Length: 116
Length: 112
Image 1 (tube, helix red, strand yellow):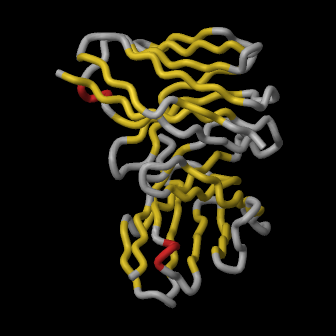
Image 2 (spheres, chains in turn green, yellow):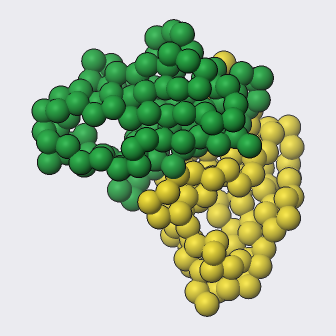
C-alpha cells in the first residue's frame, strides 16, 4: 500500500512554455501533499505544502505565481511550472500523507524537467 | 530554520557495517527519518525514530538518537552492494504539518 505516482516521469520543454506535473496517491487519500525540488547531487528542498481544498503554503523564496499548485481532490495534486526557463530544470518530487494523520510521508518517483 | 548536516561520502566493503551520521539543530523534532535514494529515483523510507526513543532496530538497520547532542545515526549491518545509494536524514520540524527538513545526503559506496 501507500503508493504515490507522478506523471510524467520526464519532460523536455522549450523556454517560455508551461509544464504541468501530476502527483497521485493511488491507494490512500492524501489530505496533505508536499512538493520538493532537487538539483543534481543536492538535497531535497521543500517548495510548498498543499492541503486538499485550500491554497498551498509556499516556502520562503519560492514564487507562487511561477509554481502553481492545485490540490483539488484527496488523491491528486498538480504543480504547474509557468513560463519555464532553463534554471527551472530540476528533479521535482512530490510526497503525500494520508488523512488518518499518520506521520509518514510517501514519496513519488520524481519528474525530471529539462527546459531548453 | 532547521539545519541538517551529513558527511558527503562513505565507502565500505561488502559485509562490513556502515554508519551514517547526521546532526540537526531543531530540538523540537518529533520524528526523525532515514530515506534512501537510488540514482534517478524517488525516496524510499527506510526507518524512523520517535524523539522519546534512544534506539530502534529494524532487521539490518539500527538507528541511534542522542537528543542532547542532536545527533542521529543509521547503522547498516552486513552491508551489501545493493545498499549503494544516497541516504538522507530528515527530521520533522515538530509543527502541525510535520514538514521534513532534509540533510545534505550521504553517498554510500559499497565495494565488492
